Image (cartoon, rainbow, N blue to C red; front, side, top):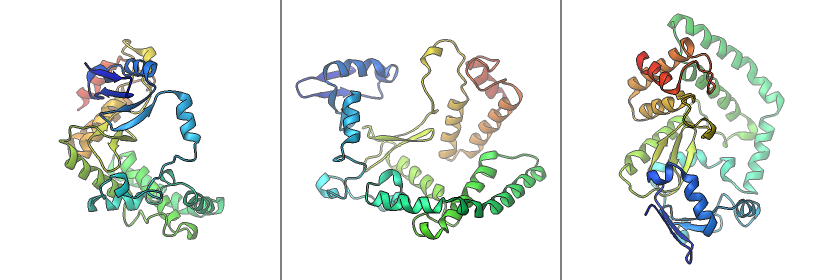
Length: 300
């Protein structure tokens, strides 16, 4: 039985990798919510809340938060100490506003606010303009350009470098120019994938753009998926743009080190987008979903 509910103990057994579930998760959610809206999901190992009122109350209750190690040790929680290979990631995340609670969150927020005043941004304008012009001038000599790696990433790095030199953020924002945070994160992700790819038990999953990786002391899966709603009103009409799903696959190949294949897919997607489809919007592409996929395959 894919879904098993023990109402007395409020425990649910449901494998999230079972087609019964991921083919239509809302069917299972409705059944669970009807009989035990607060339940322990055995496969994940944590409690879940299926009613809006309960979730809203938890989010507003100051007894709960994003941190716990300031009130209990890893030993008390039964958590293993993080491995040495995780240190670069946690060093990078240490000052993340998304992970902190007051008063530390308030202190860092004030520092960030001072660094992002208009005069600080204005000081970066000449450097950004010069960098932009140099990068664009280089496109012509190469005869082609990859927008994300050759332009967007470079301008982002100089912005982060500028803010890392801000007096108010010194020591808080890393010098990304000398020690790329993306390189640290990519190495961290790959180490987790290599270490846990044989795991059978799913754990917490968070999202990182089109890729989800587990977080905390237990890591099991890395999932590449297109970001966006499910758009049920388009079910069966073959009008959805498949390029996000195709590009998610391209990112997976790049992550796994298959750079040539990843580059080929990216080039094919750019070619199809530029030369073939009329619009990226659902129902306005000029082709069906499968036809757009065929166009990309033909351009490889």
